[in-house]
Image 1 (cartoon, rainbow, N blue to C red):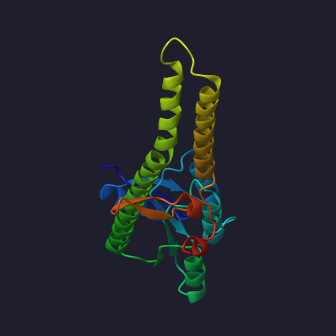
Image 2: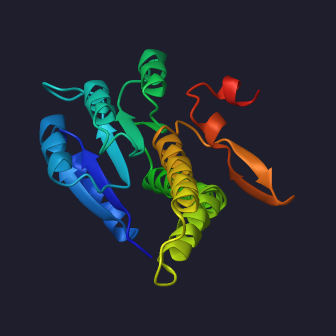
Image 3: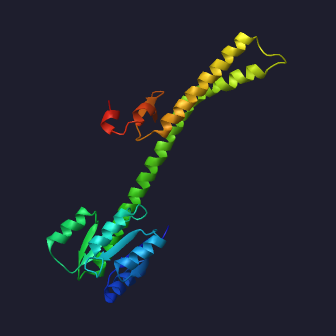
Length: 231
């Protein structure tokens, strides 16, 4: 199982030491930064962190602004974020929750409390990632069924008619050959239309195929508004 990697950001060297030491002893990987600017530099080089633990009160760039910058970067926006602070006011708590901070720990805190919170967050994140992966896999399955259904029929026409045209030493009469080429062209247009619809997919909307198999409803999937797709 992959070791969770945690970024610890605090301008207090003693707090950094306490937090990182406890994380390491618990089996986590811990990288420390004395301020938000260095933490952002670390994240720019390696955004592969499972959790960020950050102080609120820091010089130059405080924890709230740091969180906003993490959220503004698509490479790091998904990383769960825990706030540490010596302040006990509710304003910071409200602001942090508005920034999707998953936990808020007030100093001084017990090591057991910190580790329990970290373990809980990582379990939740692991379940979320697993669920998201399953959703993606299911969407791929549904799209595969759709492609088999929508493309196989016209593709069979293309291959079948081409085979007939190539069979034997002589071409069929011009009128028959023209009709066969027309059917090939029509099948090609149908395949191109399916590909264009796939390129315009904005959501996953499905319909039942063969009574118990779900496939993507391409016409509904092109809609950007879910409420329209339900009609």
